Length: 262
Length: 222
Image (cartoon, rainbow over all chains, first blue to last red; front, side, top):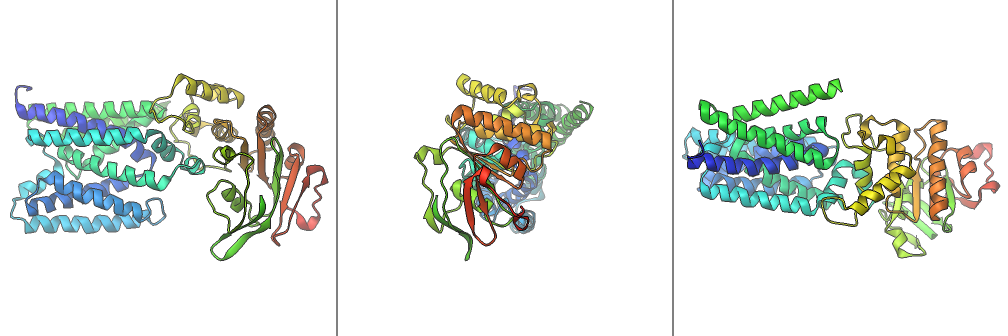
């Protein structure tokens, strides 16, 4: 299996993406941003379709749209009561735009399918490098603001009274989330992005109870799901996303049962 | 604090308030809802800028290291992180993602002082109301603040737990010469643990003095 370039590319890109998603997911869950993550994925779909329309790689279109829109959502009041309505409106607009760009571009429906459902097996070496570099950027920025992000995510009241600027943390985090969404879409597609960005972290919090161990276990679940998913996809010729989704749901259900019993 | 006026928009919530707090003093702030107690706290924490007047700290470092314990934090029973991890969130001296041995020792020491060692590795969501409040206190005391503000922090607790929490506060206050501002509606508790009081009224009249001189008439009941 490893003698094929496309499999090596898939495993390297998949590993980096899983590490980033496992780490970011812990903060996504703590900040109650699962819904926003889903919206960013839809925005990513519109961005990728826009990329196709103007002849860019899908990842570049995604990055442009998700980073701009995350900054916009941040400005619109991510913590306010109207957050969900704002996100719904933004989501509707971008899904509509995605459909429009796909229709306007002369690309086949296959392009839309690969954006929506992922195509890690077809990832090229230059795309692997792009994923690796973006993953390193997200990891470094997150580690640099780790203590403040941790405080703000797990105790926003305490963070505010201790002088942590929640607004800045929020915007930087959203931009890092946008980058993560864009790279993760390469593997699972924009429709199934929350598989890697929320499920491993949601499962991890049932087993361990410190932020650092949650991050480690969440990364473990994400990497295990991706490796197994890619391998099973190779062996059966079924979609990789299907296997990753199923494996992550199994981890989650085991976690839920474990939690209920303990 | 001298001649402080603080407002939200055009309305002055606090008007011309002056009082002094000595090092190691325990001051209770008493008053009905809406008299400006929270506004005063926000001014002290530097979250709200005064419209007029000023807050003078004997040492500037005090202003940057104030311990604050709110009434509650709405942490549900699925709140995942341990009491130890929650307390250590307030470690801000280093930028490193991991904790140094010194920092770990600091957390252990404050957990011991607040009687939390037994439940240190239990998720905070599963702790009782009193234990949660002690964890909030431990987090606020972690950096040895010279000023501690308790913002109705005992309101949700039963009588026994209130006493327990305030005994811990007084112990820490005496050992570290920490000044304490205790915002409360509970007059017996204020009388028992405070050195002095500040009474705030809706008419924006403020009286202050030693706690044994606090006289509340029927009409002033808080």
